[in-house]
Length: 251
Ligand code: PGA
Image (cartoon, rainbow, N blue to C red; front, side, top):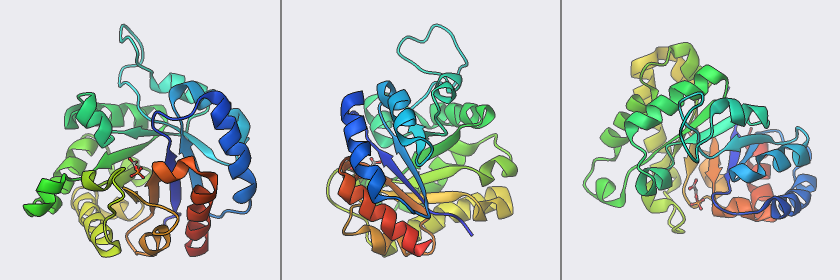
């Protein structure tokens, strides 16, 4: 049985002070949650968030470099993220692929480095609107998934998290239907099964893309959907708490 994971991706929002205020509102609302919860704040807030949540929520970063150290201005290593309490790291988010030159190959390097260091990667995959319209969704997400995980063992794949995030649904208010999301996540799991056998049944695959307090329950009720990666709605304590409650009630 896969435990549901609700992860908030704050993107480039919240100073440390704002992070503390948001968490002060959120924490009382999610006491007794029985799903896994993570927040992924901007790097400058990692330490603040770690201290503020005192174990109630896991911490995730939004990106990392694959090298352990060196002349990579502006980058952070896995060891640095671990040192401030991160357990997860989002890798290959479509915004990083689109605006910051991430490729399937760099996502794979980062994924291998994260796993080797003990961080749990949340690897993002997802098709564009044009790819969906042209009927390439299944082939594309299966391909992206396989490239991202190249070089991992089945044992390593068991603990991984993948986020299926159709690009057309991110930050747009457009959401995949429950059935579309379930079906595509099923395709990703089938690709994992083909490459890694039974480990595919342990890997968690989240849905992301305009998941909110109103639509989360339907999505989370789908058998293939193991949780959510939530952007906009994770910035509002009441909305994020409602999603966590829905996930807990299903889990
Ligand atoms: P959204 O973002 O919930 O604001 O659509 C999701 C994501 O980009 O992870």
